[in-house]
Length: 295
Image 1 (tube, rainbow, N blue to C red):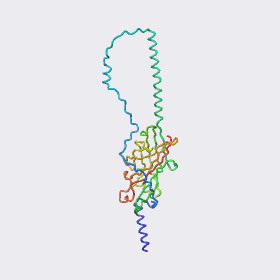
Image 2 (tube, rainbow, N blue to C red):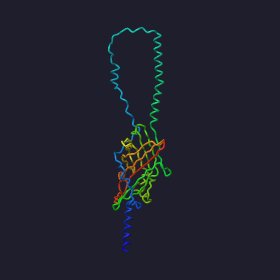
Image 3 (spheres, one colour):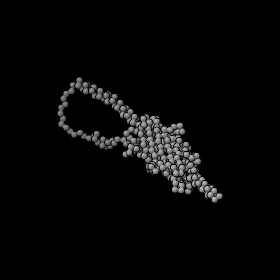
Image 4 (cartoon, one colour):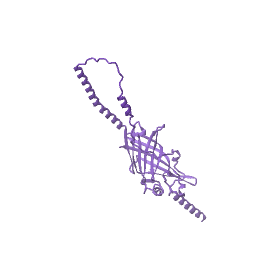
């Protein structure tokens, strides 16, 4: 009878801890996912100013006063020599040559400008990101953790629906950018109770904030062939500047992007406000793999 009471007490304690931890009864004890141990931590940076069409600085022109001064300047006096006589036929021939030169210049200039514009437009290409329950070429996954009795427990999940675009500017990665909108209402996990809790008011609160949005401000090449992506991530009505490494490359006629990092959910005020939250680790492991089609 005593052992039965002890068993009941432990069952109640386990149920309470699971509930306080966000309904995490499905967390795996002893086989925890250790992905977060190898992942770089996403750096929090100031919120970025996004300006896609920043005008290039205008070429410097000579001040009007200087130009006027030079125009009105008196040319130095030189020795005057008598010019050789020019016949009427020579004058007409010179005028015809000058006219032909002007016509040729007028014909060639627009063509050259058009060629330059074509080359510039050809260097930029946009790719479309789309993922839903029927697609398997793009995925965003996460692993959450909590600590209980000196053990780290994990639960996996992901986001089923997201859309966006990748714009690649050849030979100018700093002008390339990524934009992504995630449908938080389609979040999923390995546990039905956990999924419901994550959609609720203490976490993503999808009833009021149904989407998350990321837009990059800078993509900078790194020494290892990857790119350091900097941008703004908005969730739960909070925008935070973040920076993380990623692979960005062309694969055939598509654009491929992939990366993984650890991120602190509390920067976006996601989680319980009361003591229950101490069971849950602040850091969440995030990984993504995206294959985008030509727009």
